[in-house]
Length: 173
Image 1: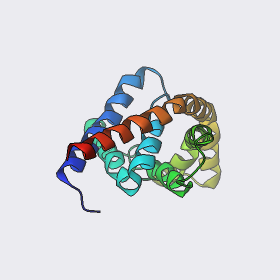
Image 2: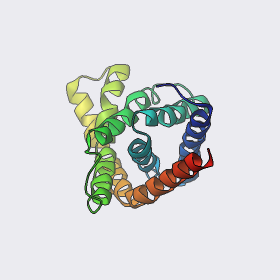
Image 3: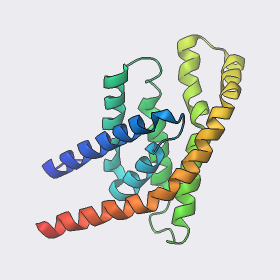
Image 4: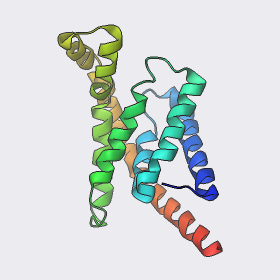
């Protein structure tokens, strides 16, 4: 996937927007727009969406430390990206918003479960302790999933803005 200079710039800005949106929302635990951006970027940029996603991941690590909490970020957002990549590109317009909101919510509901294997490895948990860790985090995952569902209302508008920006860029050439 060879990138043009314009794409590198756009993807760097989108990764930075993901990071800034997370910082702005830190007052509200487990409520953020990262799922919204991951889904929207994937719908618009497909494989290339991995660039802004991983720019966000590395900015997060650079500013908050490349510690054990950060390791799952190397795959957690890729799981959401992969699920969206598996969705049909020609999905009927009427169901797109609800499908994307549902996928966004599911990622939030399963965030702790996705996170758990790495925590188990780093902290020496056996399977039972890992399950206990997941169960202890269920209230947070519930809040995460519900907030992702409602934040998902923004997915279609973000997709529309990105597509408009892409069309306008093409028309400038």
